[in-house]
Image (tube, rainbow, N blue to C red; front, top):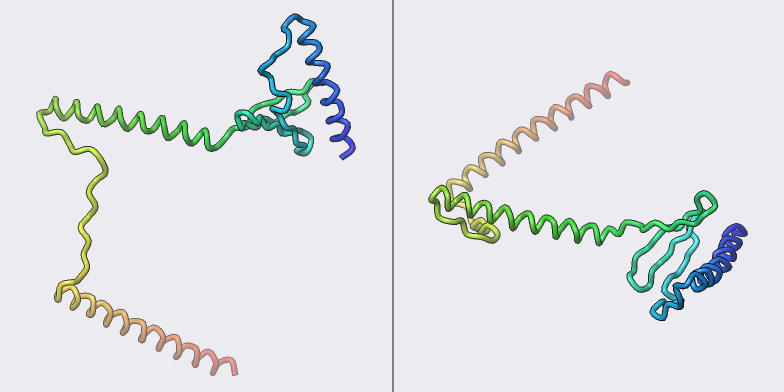
Length: 161
């Protein structure tokens, strides 16, 4: 905890010094720069820097006596980029399918999601008979199985005594 406080003090001292170095180098004041744009939070041996303007997070580490901040990958941005890439790929594949269908002389396929399968709400009398036969068979098989287990258990108990 003491190391973090020292690091924060060093960073606090380095930021104004860096600003003075920039202005003395001739870059001048930056009127659009917001002094409250970044927020630093300790994270173990490093710091997390939140950019309040963009919402991006960077991890700042000290390497070779210099602090370097590297952007932390944002899962949401990665997912959105992948969705955009896949949407473009789907559009190009649909265009290719249309082109191939036209070349083969086939009517173009309807675009959009496939129609849902028709729902079945009732069984035919023959299907119900088949289900009843299957249930009867299963019931008989289970009764025989549990009967055998009961017999084996009784035999095991008689040997144990």
